[in-house]
Image 1 (tube, helix red, strand yellow):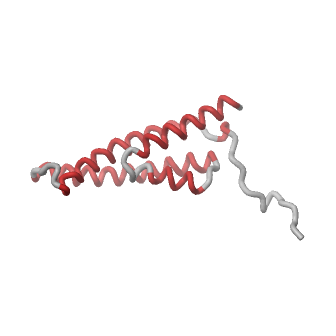
Image 2 (tube, helix red, strand yellow; image 1 turned 90 degrees about the vertical axis):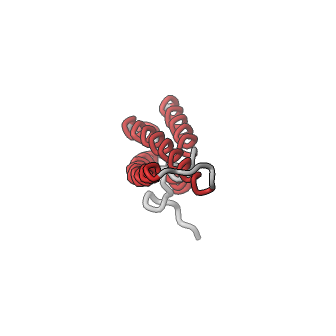
Image 3 (cartoon, helix red, strand yellow; image 1 turned 120 degrees about the vertical axis):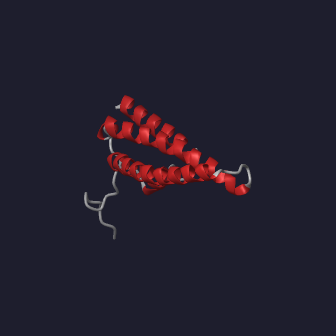
Length: 126
């Protein structure tokens, strides 16, 4: 026999749009754009390994520094993703997709646009 769901066993429900602060959304949007732009530059730098261009020693040094800075920026991006994700109470699939936004070139721009549109629409509806 099945027991009725209690508050402790019930699946978490999506938070109302008012639970997501505008500051969390703004921080996420800024970090998604910065991370996406840096990832494009890192990806362009990787093209030197397939023979698209040859890099001088000073360019190699700058590309190495850029990759390290992108790593740091990605950590900040992940923190902003976690904050927004916890406030919105989304599922783990959304979290994984948002994390991949900082690793897959161009994905952060598409995900950022979709998240912002969804949250703005939910706020207007409430």
